[in-house]
Length: 149
Image (cartoon, rainbow, N blue to C red; front, side):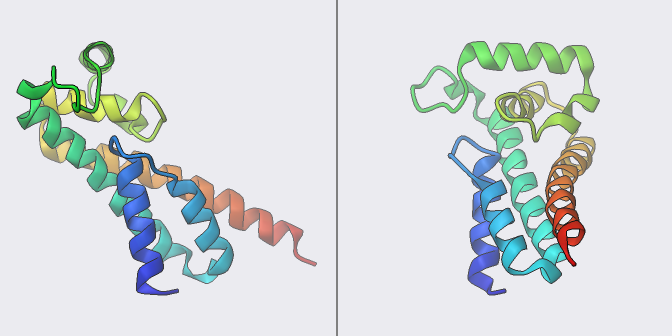
C-alpha cells in the first residue's frame, strides 16, 4: 500500500463528510480488496479523514454562520433548521449518526451553530465514523473469509 493510496482515501473520506462529493466507501472497498492485511491502517485513515471533515463542518457552523445566506454556503437554511431542531431535541447522541448520508453533514454543522462543546462532539463523531468504516471492513473482509476454500 502506498502513501498515495492512503492520501486518496483520506481526501475521499474528508470530502464525503463535507459539501464536496465523496465516495469514500468505494475507495475504502477497493483498497481493502487490494490490501486486506492493511485493514487497520485503512480504517484509521478513513476514520481520521471523515472525522476531520465533520470537524470542518462544526467549524463552519461555529464561525461562518453569518454567511449562511450566500449561494456558496454548503447547507440550505431549511436543512440547517431541521438539523438544529433534531440536535436540540436529541442532543449529543445524535452525533453518533453523523455518518448517515443527507443528515450527517447538517447535524455536524448544526452542532457548531449551537455551540456544542468540541471534545464530546469529537468523541461521538469519531465513534460514529469509525463504526461506519468498521462495519464496511467487517462485511467485506468477513465475506472474503467465508468464501475462502
